[in-house]
Length: 207
Image (tube, rainbow, N blue to C red; front, top):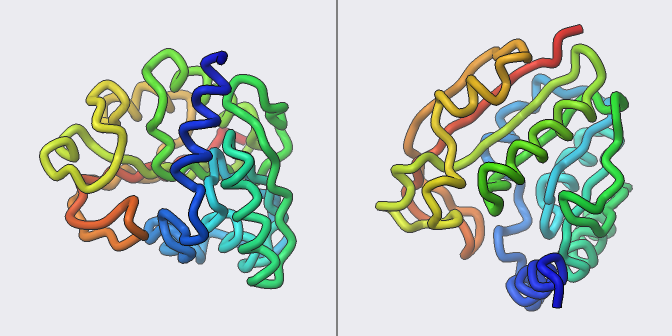
């Protein structure tokens, strides 16, 4: 098997059951950004898994594109969109083989997409930035290194976790509106449950 097929099989297994591993409700950080969104905006949710965030964006009236490497996850995302009565363009693809859009998105969302190391992360961040239109909004949430002690979710690999310095360097070419560092109790399905060390980034592509 190739590395990509190994990864696909890993996530397919994690998403195999009928239950939603990270729940059906949107990520709390994303939900708090509702006032920044408006109907008709084009949004991309990166590695959207079973669709909880992409479906929520669609429920806000956005035109939503998502992708995930797991066919099983995408199947469940489409089912959740149908259940909620919204349209969702959910596609199957990995970070390096999916046809990323360029310069067409008003909003790009990345929630707990910390399954790759520094080199792949650099490529992913570059593609996320390139996908946005000038003036477009980037919403990113991840775990900090302190999460390793909590063990309540995340990759368990320190180099994959975010620090403020890392995000400020990675998005130095964007207008950073805020970076929030805090601990919070997550209740997002069995995959994210308990006190967690979080960091949120809200930034805009220069217009």
